[in-house]
Image (cartoon, rainbow, N blue to C red; front, side, top):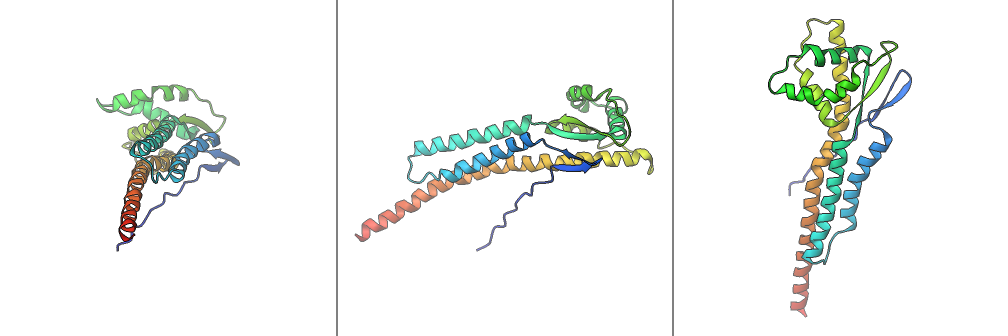
Length: 217
C-alpha cells in the first residue's frame, strides 16, 4: 500500500532583531487569537468523534466546527500585520505608489484600495536612515503593495537597487507569516470534511461488527 506523506507547515519566525530591538511581525495578542481559533477547530473535532450519534446530532457537530472555522477565517481577514520600513525603504515605496507607477484600468482600483494606508504613511518623519517604523497592513493590502511594485525596474546596482531589494525582503518576511496562516485556512476545511467522514465510517464498521456478532450468536 502506498504511503501518504503528510507535509507539515512550519511556523515562520514572527520577530526579528534590528537596532538592538526585538520587532514583532505579528503582535502577541493577534498571534494568540489566530492560533487559538485554529487550535479550537482541531480540539473540537478531537473531542467530538461523533460515534453512535444520530445524523441530526452529527450535523450539529459539523455545523459547530464550521462556525469555529468561519470565526478563524474572519479573524485572519481582519488581523493587522506589522510592516517595518526604514527611511530609504519608506521613501522609495511611497514615491513609487504615489508618483512613479503608471496605473491602468485594473491596477488603478488596487491603488485606490491602498489610499487609507498610504494616507497613514504619508508625511512620516524619521530621525535617521537606520530607524524603522511600523505600519499596520492586512494580508490583502500587503498583496496589493507587492502586486503594484513587482514590475518596477532599476538600472544598475545603484543605491535604489539595494533599497528596492531590501524592501522586497521586508515584504517577503511578512508574506511568510501570512502564507502560514493562509495555509491553515485552506487545510482546515479538508480536515473538517475528513472528520465528518470518519464519523460515518466508524458507525458503518460498528454496524457490520454488530451484524456479524448477531449472526454468530
